[in-house]
Length: 465
Image (cartoon, rainbow, N blue to C red; front, side, top):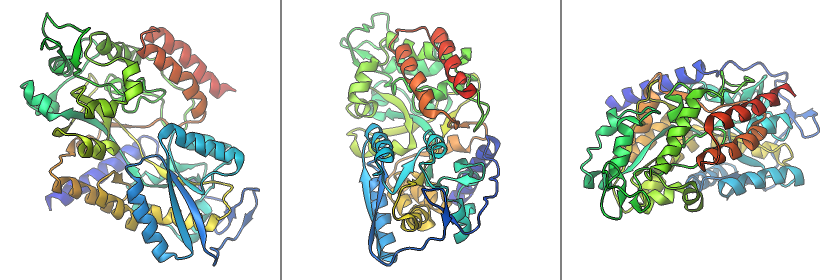
């Protein structure tokens, strides 16, 4: 009973977040029964009686087994459709998808991202599935309220939601214990860009040099660090999802005025001073240089016990728990001047406009976003599915394993504690501007305020073209 009340509250507050942040009502599509082809015409479609293979691509290797289980269940119900699940790492994945658009060899269905789909939609590289949703009477009300609307623009729908995520602190509980730090500190710790608050105090206490001095000691040698207190996630590019977005938002920064708006605020002093502090952790020896994080990966640095904690997304829970030899803990993000804030994001599946098997691809998309598949995914505990029953199963799996993931759900429960991933046009162009800008800042090559002012002017100019 207590768990059900918790889940109900969680889903209600997530719905309030998405609606408040711009998950507006979708406009009606023009057609009730027609589907759009790559030539721009519309025609009725029907699944072929011949056996066909659908290529389905995703980037998260942790989710691959879950969706292979979904694919098996789908083919059992649809014997004439085989789903081939393909996986590649983030960078290779998007290169493959975009190269496939050009060559005409993209996967029939692929996992899409809020940062990517606006460009694909504008270029008419993905299918508007709204006519299919209407034709088949798909109930988008089964998803956490508002999630489905994130994938709608001007009455056209480009995906059905799969999951949602938040950010929390991942820590090495053994290192906490060795330093005499009570994990309960994560419930109340604070952060500010001036001195880092009690959060930075913990980071310093967990940082050790070769002589056993921690970062609070006057004898600490930052040139000979053997254990970092904090493993940052890199420069973060245009969104800083797991890197700096939570710190900046808790300092009053916001990316835009909401989905589909045409002005960014990277020049906000709140972001510049946040990044000054973020880079300062590296300069003080409390966090590794960007080159180490880039070459080895932040997750591996934590798992290899190079550092005591990091900030990461809920989709990485299994990676830390399954691959670490120490006890893994998940704590709340620190409370900043404007409260505790986590980015909220979610994924969906999109259909390649050039697929030769549109109807079969659509049937798979429907199933992958159905309660049956959500429950299969939930039973693996790998992510929080977009359907309530799947969320409940994920929570049950982690609870049964003795893993407390409440930091992620508690942040989602806070009505003022989350903000949406920025959804606008010109995503690729914005990334091309902001990625090198953020790299130069975190490398210590550029002054944050100056670099962000220049970059913001370039970003906003994109919307004037």
